Length: 480
Ligand code: BGC
Image (cartoon, rainbow, N blue to C red; front, side):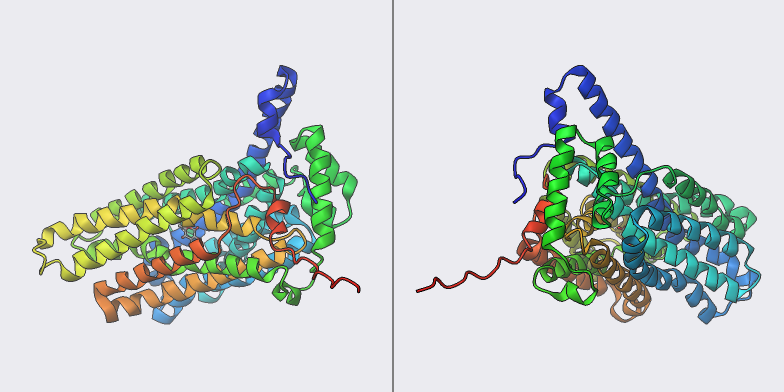
């Protein structure tokens, strides 16, 4: 049984001598740097999903695309991400977490060069699938790599850096689209991802491999060496014991074994969180904000775009709230508060847009009301379902199954993303503002799911978290 009273860097820091605490703050700085480098994949994830909307305005006439071609270019990334995420599971087990992150960086580089140079629709689609695969790889490998290296009491904040980078990437993509619009330079819009891609690869090369993967692969000495860079000496041995214990009790090494009782509940929670993150409607706003604002009465172009950039800024800033609170308050309170706010905002938006005239709301008030409640929705998403879903997918699974179970949860996220963004224009045409009630209903479902099934993981080691899924051997009847 692993010890329940272990402390990590953060606790040890308070009581240590000054030389020791210097060593520990050095370790803290090092782990923050490691997390920031791996999170660069998130920046590319956000940038490459956000940039296409603005770029399409110029790609369409340049490459003479019809509606079918347009749809393919936009959805190719999500399609690639679905498969990239599954491949990420196999790859993170086979070649390790570090190399999978490097492979993601290389795919980002290849995809962005290819898309910038694309002479025709076919090459453009192929390059967007490669970028999608890179996004899938990084959305599995980056949170997992950070979680497996982080001390337990800082894990929430460090893994949330990934989501902070996603939101920054989305914001940068809006700004790049706007800055390059006058010159219609869509090739630059797409090609710029080459820069963070290169930084990701160069940054990852000198970083250590995850100690959990090293232990799983039998490289105990190397795992000890890595842990010693990040933990106090006493903590190193305690962590090694916990990891070893977890690996001996959870030996699922096959995809099908993920359905066994010792892991199935965790897998259902991972998939549930991943799907609820999407079906509560986030990407209808992230991908379609200018259209939503125009429909609500903003004038075309500039004002709607400025409101969209405002949403991007709010998304980044509110993610900082999660980073500040996630290791203090815990995951569940933030999830519930955020989902409560998201659901209430969506329902209010639905009421204002659907019954505005009956309620005496003047048409010109509709635009500020829409921005206000969409802004509130984004704040609530950004401190809850945004970062915490990626965080919990990286922490709820046992060491042996983490890569494959994260891959399945993440590809469920991409599948749900694909369906929601594909269906939004059609549903909006059919349901009008009542569509907001549908996403609000999903929000209620998510609240019940979190209350009923999602465990609190704050302050626990990954091995302590996975203990709860362990199937206890049946009690043998006493011999007479
Ligand atoms: C989601 C994306 C979304 C982004 C918005 C991420 O956590 O997975 O689908 O576009 O947050 O910030």
